[in-house]
Each structure stands twice: as C-alpha cells, then as structure tokens.
Amino acid sequence: MRERDLSKLVDAVLTDRQSTILYHIVETYVKTAKPVGSRNLAKKYSLGISAATIRNVMNDLEEMGLLCQPHVSAGRIPTDKGYRFYVNGLMSLQVLGIMERRMILEKLHLHSSVDVNEILQAASRVLGRISSQLGVVLEPRFYQGVFQKMELVSVSENRVLAVLSIKSGLVKTIMMEIESGVSDDQLHETAWLINERLSGLSLLEVKETIDQRLNDVTVPQNRLLRLILDSSDRLFSFDQDGLHLDGAQNIVANPEFSEVAEVARILSLIESKESFVSKFDSVPPENERISVRIGAENQEDLFRGCSVVTARYTIGKVQGALGVVGPTRMQYSRIIPLVDYVGEILTRTFHEKWS
View 1 (cartoon, rainbow, N blue to C red):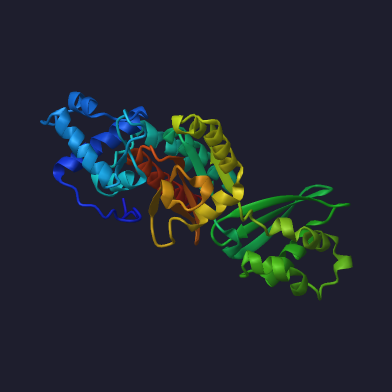
View 2: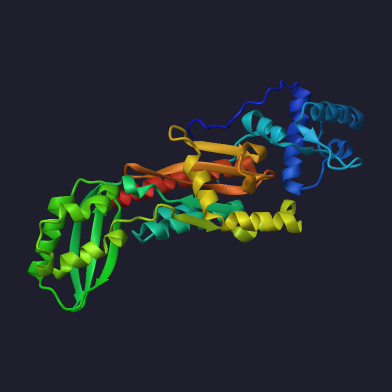
C-alpha cells in the first residue's frame, strides 16, 4: 500500500503503558460501543497492572484530550484526538480476507458491463456491504475528457444510436428519435463531419462551441445534424455531480445515531448530494492516495460526528473518488485497506476494459 495521508499529527507523546491502554480502549469501544472501564480492561487483557493503575493512566489520557468520560460513573471513550493518535501510530492495518477480495473482484474487475455508471454503482454497493457503513463513489470530472469520435448507427427507421468515445477510454451511448429514416451514407457523412470539427476538444469545449464550429454547415439539409445540435447537452455531458451511495441503512443503524436528532442529521447528510460532491471532490488531495478525516477534522456540519475514509481511482487521465462514511467509532484498521483496495481494482478494471 502506498503512503497514506493520515491528516494532522497529534501533539502528544505517550509512554508505552499509555499507548497500550489507549489502544485497548479504542479497540474495545469500536467493538462494543460502550464506555470502557478500568476493571474491564484488567479482566480482559493481561496488562500486568492493577485496575487502579489502569484508572490512573486513563485519567492521564483524559487530561491529554485523548479520552473523555460521557457520564460521571461511566468508563472512558476515545475522543477525535484519541482516534487520530490510534490511526496515526497504534493500529495495524488488517489484510482483506480471501472472500472479501473475491467479492470485490467479481463485482468490479469481472463486471460484464462496460457502462461506467453500473460499475461505479457496484463499487459503492460493495463498499457499503463489506464496511457495514455508507459506501460512496464520486464520478470523475469528465468534462476534462477529450472527445475522440462519434459513431452513428441506425437502430430502426426512426431511431439512431450515437456512440461517443472519449480518449480516457469512456464510451457513452445515447438513443435519439428522428422523424424519418436516414441512409447509411447520411449517418457516415454526419459522423465524419462531427469528428472532423470536434475531435481533440474537451467535452466542455465541445458543449460551449459546437454551434459556432458547425455554423457554416447547411443544417436544414441535414436533419440528423440538427438533431445532434439540439441534443448536444445530453450527448456531450457526463454527469458532473455523478454520485453513487449504498448502505444508508448501515450508517443509520449505528448506536451513535440512535437519537432522533442524530437520525435526522444523518438522513439530511445522505440526501445532500452537494455535500458529498464537495467533500469527495476535495479529499484526498490530488497527490495523495488515501485520506482519513475524523470527526471535527471534517469542517462541514453535516459530517460532524462522522469519519470519512477516501481514496482516488482513475479512468484514463481523469480521477474520481470513493470511500466510506461512518461514525468516528469506525473499524479503521479494516476500512482503510478496503477503500484502498477497491480504488486499485476500479482503476485496474477501467484500464483493462478500455486500454
């Protein structure tokens, strides 16, 4: 696995004993979702120290801001800072199991479809299923893609299929209705004209200048060209905010979000397409492979109380982002390699399908 961006370093230096106890508290709380007490740690782990000593260490960790006590008589739970310390230096990344890798390969790498949307939706589904949280996949910014060619195929007397090829390897098909049939010669002539005038331009340039680039063509004599001009928004637009989510029921089921207000906030987050697009379009940064943002490190209000693990994947020369959103009480050691691996397989899948 390549170098990971694990965000801000924690400005605390712990002794081996403090590190060990923080590690066990995080591990235990992630599994149980219940505050961890000193007696529980003393009984469960062979730490070689008494419950009283453990309690003193927990007090020290609380003073450092790594733990907090939700109630006076309760045990301790990790803070965002505590999780950050754990992620940065205490946890060991798990190796994905054979069955999990097989599922990812079957759902993505061996996917029979060449349709980008279907593959990305499958990616969000497998992320949600394996992580038991919310799987998210953001489509690449396809407007940066370079138009390569268009093919026009007669499907029936009144229907023409337009097949667009983008240099990044993407293929898009659009079915268009036409009032009356067109000959094969008209199809080839129109496709040649489109390719001669537009090939090599970005999709954004095509959309913005197609009228000017074809303004010297006698459009009334070419009904098919008029149809293409009228359909240019559909033809040359890949959804810039294409977002695929799966596993909403998983994230809502977390005990952290059991309160009515928290459920409402999580549902608002899931329904806020703009928030996800903005979040996943900005992290991880272009030069980083994977990113982990914990709780308050996410500045957006809707992501408060959540952790976001993201990675990038590529389709040709354009990049997209994917990841998992869940509570800060997340299985980081399992989800980080999961997100990383799905990103790798997505990139490999698109490369092999269109190389």
